[in-house]
Amino acid sequence: MALGFHKSLFGYNCEEVTEYVHKTISSNQEIQNSLNKKIKDAEQKISELNSEIDSINNEKAEITKQLEFYQAKYEEIKVLSENIGKLYLVAQTNANAIIDAAEKSKEAANSEIANSIAVIDSTNESLNDMKVRINELTADFCAKVDELNNSLIKTKAIIDSADVDATTGKQEYETVFESLTK
Image (cartoon, rainbow, N blue to C red):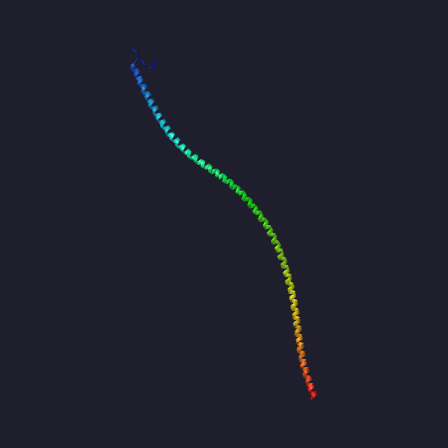
């Protein structure tokens, strides 16, 4: 029995063959409908995926533009940072040179200050010596002036005394002369 048909006088049973063909057509139609539905779903999915691919391509283009922009900015920043690094090194070198010069100036100033302090100390000693010497001279001068004053006072007393003695002597002389001449 081929395909499960019964044989009849003129070959296979027509009803069974017709029924088989209808079942096969119906089954094939269902399969075809199912496959057509799957094709439509797949085409719709393909269309959605193509839209998504277009959207992703647009996003990719935007991201590529942004990437190019940021890469350009990166290069600018890289060049800028290199320049800043160079400027930093130059500034650091200049700062070190300034610090060295300041240290040398400080040492020179400290040396000058030490010399000036030595001169001040020497001058102060000289002034103190002069003060002592002037005080000694002043004391000697005052003593000499006091001595001279005392001498003048004594001389005045002697003169006053001599004047009194002269006046007394004159009076005595006049008295004696008068007594003689009378």
